[in-house]
Length: 254
Image (cartoon, rainbow, N blue to C red):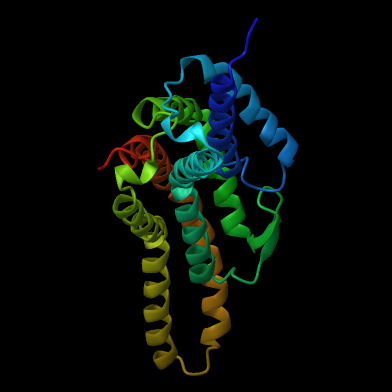
């Protein structure tokens, strides 16, 4: 059995795109899963799809061309991974907004997946988003879209030819929109509570409005969080499904 040098270069380039993708997608992006395991997943997937991947190695006839193609594949993998994670960035933003609005911003917990300390509501919503992501089977769609990316941008195709920056920046803007939409009921609730206790403070001057409103805000926020779980689920599910199509659109937008 003879292995051509071109086949080795193609496999390395496939592995670079796959490895960069696994470094950035949800669950694999944190510190909970070691780098060796993430690399192993990328290695296995690259071995499986390598025979099916189209390639153009015109730039790989010298050392500088191979380095350029390697950086190109890493950028493509990271771009696709960041597109998938946009929904999770929005969920983290919503978690911070909700924690601030209901008065639980000082309540922090360690998120072992990301290795960071976040507000408890933020960590809870992040785990809930991961649960939806895998239970709804969206991870299968993400893998299918990633494999299709080799057909849209074959190995050796310079990814800036697709001009993905404009659409990617638009998706970054949607992170703020989705985060505010998820937290909108809590922002409205906090506004109504502040207005109500402002009026009550004028009517009953001896009442400790601050401490009373603080307790009411936490209790009302937790009740609203449980009541709006289906609304939050729909936002997360729709955003995750949309990110799958955006993965492919963002690299063929040119």
